[in-house]
Image 1 (tube, rainbow, N blue to C red):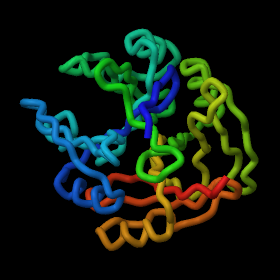
Image 2: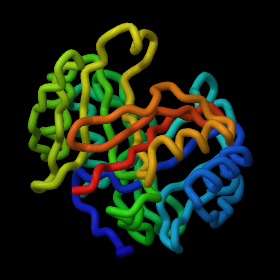
Image 3: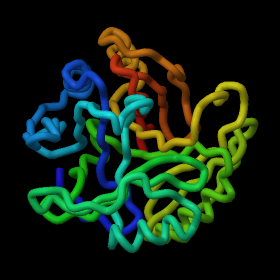
Image 4: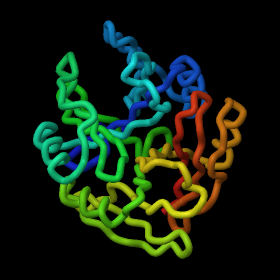
Length: 263
């Protein structure tokens, strides 16, 4: 394990918002063998930091208050940016929305903003100070390892993120599933993207999907079921990449697991 030095355009953190944080903590600590460190935030409540082998990999909190009315539980991915204020302003110029304006996180943790792209997918912008993002566990399982945009207009989303994040991209034909876009940041894979098409996506809003790396996809799905999760997409192979599944945790937050094939 080593500290990760993030650059503009890399996903650096993942945060669970849930209406039952106690149940979520039980679920993820059992499923992922995570430990918990509690950070008290006064009136904002408790921030639960998930750790693996002593390194911080993600966090969660209890959704409470009118600002969360109508918002389902979720995993929120954070994008590291050079300047939160500048990126948020450009985000709006390019057709996106700022949901929560740039703000400092107490304790010199960093600066952040919540945003939504022109197609409606939300994420967070972050520039760390005391907090420098998730540790690097790759290639071992135990943390989020991939982030994937599911959108209604892949061409527009591709241009939007490429310009704001400095991403380049490659397009991979996936047969009946269409084109899979692999975004790259400074020559390294940064994220994926698919156009939502077909009846399975009816009623599903554009969103960023977050993938947890596991040693065995089928075994992890079975364990998740025993712990109260639901299977939304059963385990299946992605040729040349790995085996994945989409799950909904007992508190209704959606996430994915993936076991990468040996390189």
